[in-house]
Length: 224
Length: 396
Image (cartoon, rainbow over all chains, first blue to last red; front, side, top):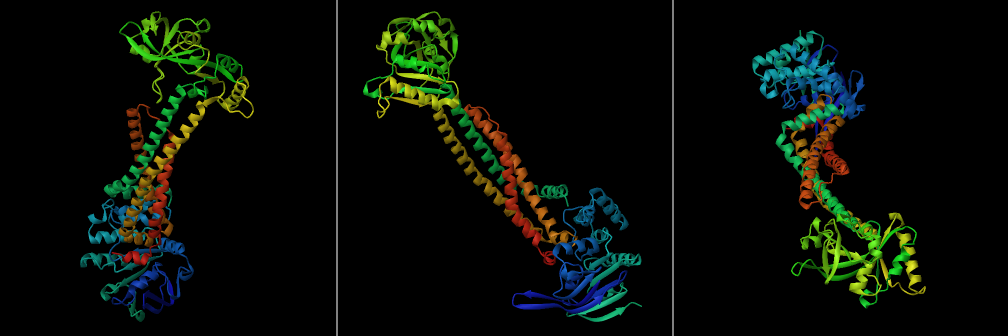
């Protein structure tokens, strides 16, 4: 993943809001990077662009060799489908849909057959210790369990990058720590992880931290 | 994503919101049901009228003198005999008519019309005999005093099967009853069963005098030849009546099949009109679907955002919502067809024309409800497909 002088300007009627003001950075394969900053620093916009949900206004963003600015909506959907696994602060599980179906949904959009979907989704949930909860709906699960379902959903397609936006934001301390431990384990097994947070303590788990302020990179540090 | 996956998704979604789905479908159900029922009723009416008209005789030409009210009756027995020789004519029934009192005793009487005719009358006017025999060539040529009673007359006089062979008096003259006719039922015009048939010669001799005719019924072999046969008869009668090239006909020929085609056209238009009015209900039902789908897109904005983040393309979302609308309208259409058929069967039973099942109605109703689903589902579905994933994910 490589950002080169990326800006993103939102047109809010009369005012133009510059969320990102020229960001250049790269994330290499197998890295565990945290993007840290207070609210309003452009974190969410970064997440949208890194996750191919949005395109830069100027500058270029390349992921696995594809230049996002030059791609159409369908091509972006394809990149999201094949290369990115999202984990959101509010879990964003599909309501009224069982855990296993939630986890299977990304595979549905890859055109995986029904049987393979349920096998792979079941296996992903097993790995996260949710083997007993396959048919539970989100409302029947605790926050920590919901976030683990969301992580299983992000992992099920075996994506190149896991993109986590405040994954511990809605969790109790103990559950949050468990989730962070999960990310550490995933990194240890060779995944590329980008963690977006406002909390410097959470960012501690990453091997590299990039600090954002007012749409600019203000500081970069590597873990010892 | 293939259609089966989408259908599964749509069905599970509709299962979760059963009440809403049912209410949404109700509009389509009512629309389709009223189209099916009204078209069914229209067809029933048409079939009923057609059957009544056919009961008057198929391929029937009725010739009557045009100067009837002027007092002169120009048609003669000779005309009838001549017409029998025209190409394409299978049977000719000359008819003369008088009103008379028929009695079995001094107190048991009925007033009816006495029709003098030939043995061909039964064929031309599509009567069949219930008991005994019809007039025969022998009885008509001999102008014998025999009578065939219409069903109404027999009922009025309280005569049953045993009356064949007995004697009735017509205007005081004894006639032997040789047969009783099957009832034809009302045709909407005069009661075709309220008449007594006797040999033409007998009517002319005892009740009317002279050899003029009230009408001549002509049966044509092939319905396609009606016009040519009619023209040939016109030509023949003009010559026989000595009408010059510029003179007007002193007779008119009435073509049963024309009445039939006019009736068909009228009732066809009526059916179309009824169906058209009913399809307004279908459109209203479609708007109901659109309304609910738009609400649904709004409510599920976040879901759409999530799906897009998980790799759904715009067209995956479009199809998902379109299939949902289509499922609603198709299930609604199916239920509507069943309700509509039930209603038209019920009305048919009450009206007495039975139940006419027309598969094409079902096909048309299904196609229509699909079209409604697509037309009214496509806009909400496009709205859903076009949502910006970033905004959709942030939507609360």
